[in-house]
Amino acid sequence: MSPTTQRRFLLGEAEMPTHYYNISADLPVPLPPPLHPATREPVGPDALAPLFPMELILQEVSQERYIEIPAPVRDVYATYRPSPLVRALSLERSLDTPAHIYFKYEGVSPAGSHKPNTAIPQAFYNRQEGVTKLATETGAGQWGSALAFAASQFGLDLKVFMVKISFLQKPYRRSMIQAYGASIVPSPSNETNAGRAILEMDPESTGSLGIAISEAVEVAATHEDTKYALGSVLNHVLLHQTIVGQEAITQMGMAGEGPDVVIGCAGGGSNFSGIAFPFLRDRLAGRTSTRFLAVEPASCPSLTKGEYRYDFGDTAGTTPLLKMHTLGNDFKPAPIHAGGLRYHGMAPMVSHLYDQGFIDAVAYKQNECFEAAIRFIRTEGIIPAPESSHAIKAAIDEALRAKETGEERVILFNLSGHGHFDMAAYDAYLAGELTDVVYEPAGAGAEGERPAAAEREAVTA
Image 1 (spheres, rainbow, N blue to C red):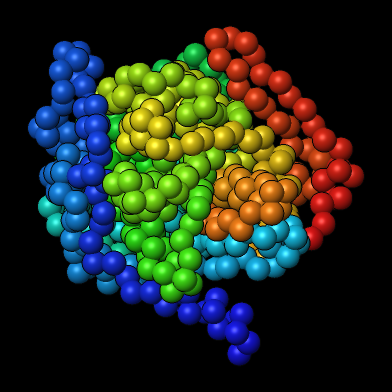
Image 2 (image 1 turned 30 degrees about the vertical axis):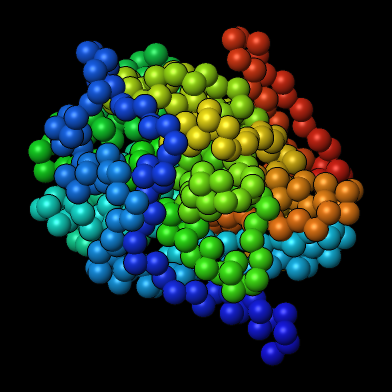
């Protein structure tokens, strides 16, 4: 085994953490609380009880720095964790950069993404409290397949409302969800009041995460035997994802380096938080100057172009009000292929840290992200999910800036999932058929552009 191969292999051998890291304990300014939509008063645990088991509600409001991971959860985690940290040496060589590029690869999970990191504990805590059925939404299908996997591990029935455009674009994600034993319907649907209302206004609606959330929440709120599970945005979801960053800290130590910049794609915020929050602890304490970069699509840029205010988490306005960067809960996202990034708002915790100046953000068009993905495929050999391509694009830009300045920079990004079920998107990109959409606030409209197929195929390793 060559030294390079051995080094890459050893980076995957870190010990799995025993606790989640709760960044709430280290925030210099407390997070604004969720509010009741009618009274505008802070929401207490009782208001969330119809939707979530009590243990998850307690985690949502916890100020404890570390929360133990239950043994049954660790047992399921052990099927794929710890996930590998890889030095992207081939990508570095292709860019001719002095930067060192590392990626944490979450595509090794059974569902092919980081989403099982929170799906597994959510399924466990529901089962522990006697819940037998769950309802949820999914965008690109990664969360739906992750929760379907977790539900199968703990004997729960699951109903998934999948955003209609992704339901049509990603048939094999649908098949995966059904293979794990869950039922799935395209959203908006005729099965809920929220879905029927949307279809009455727009029979051809391609859906949104906000609409799908409304449908899943309605099912949970109107059935005593059913609870709701969410794959991003809320504090307890971000908490569970910190297992990623904690492993990465240990693995970076094994590599003898620390990151100058930590990067993650950002839709609802769970993937970015998972890699960033454990490293942010030292930044919050003033012990490092590490930068944190959240990368979002130009068509749905909640951080870079949204307003920081209280808003509903769903389209129908049934959830508590959350203070977050938002494009408005009635925002209709463009049907880009990065379905997991088509959400109108950003996690309150990520929004808060961005507002406080601890996080930077950038937005990219989907064609430039697929261009970066093709370079990554032809150097590192892994086909990334369209969502993850945003982080790859940012990492490449950071590495090229290091090349311009001659600076030795260490870059870490989260490769949140593989793109094995997204090959139709790659087909469209290589054929020059992807349209770039740029969101402009206040009714300024959007601009579209379509590069030639020859330009797409000109990307080389």
